[in-house]
Length: 358
Image (cartoon, rainbow, N blue to C red):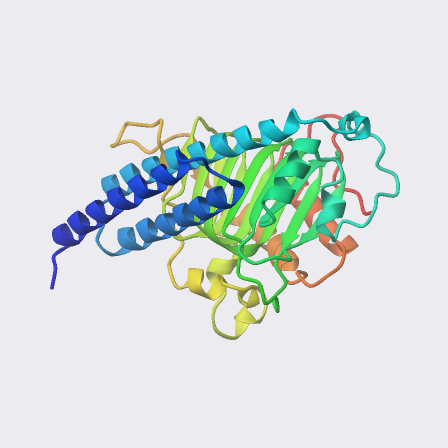
């Protein structure tokens, strides 16, 4: 039987070969299809690193490999942005270049259960990206105090959530009886104070988040978590590898209710596709790694575990959300749950309201 050292050495050789191959694909006239394939391969490599760390891979090797994958992911996004900019400067009708509608026009919004309804305010470049990469689900420009419910309707989706207004409630649901594979990644960018983002799904990849302040973000379960530029964030998820934070402070973490569901209790949240697989691993949410805190003998002051009282309030709202993944709208009771969480967990800036029933 091979030793842990031998297995680590073999992993290093294979990992380097895989990175070289993927980098080569990115530098030889990439297309949207190529970028999608490379992105899937990076997600698969992330899972392999996570699994190897649980068995034999040293933590410092894990950090090194994740840094390499993060650089490759940045290269993918940079290349994808270059492709988008090329289409942006082609001739378009003047109507596609009209200013975005004012966020103040929120009376009687269209139903938000379809992907199209949730992306009506995206820019023309984002529309082009969706057309080029149908696996991407985009939820953008959510008005202040609005509610949005979006159902995952495609296998292995990449979920991109951006520009969530103050006090808004966004729920991305993976129905319990869905034939589609779990989402492979969630990207969250620019979440305003008082907002709540819940991904009621088992994410078979990473949560990548930046620019979030005084808000709540939660997932049922996820393999990896990376957070940049977050301040006074409440984060809940069952995560099977050590979460990573950078340039962040005041981060409060909890494993969420999925970690405590066992036996017959699993009739609710554990019915989410793919969740059973992730629950087979213990949650590592209480092992946050702060890449900008290098004092090994002293815990980072930039994060802490959520206390039991507030965690109980949060878990009640999350369980209610997980059990409504087959709904067609966000119920008044669920809005009330999140009102309680917002008032309990987050400071209330003057003039900020809780999510409104729509």
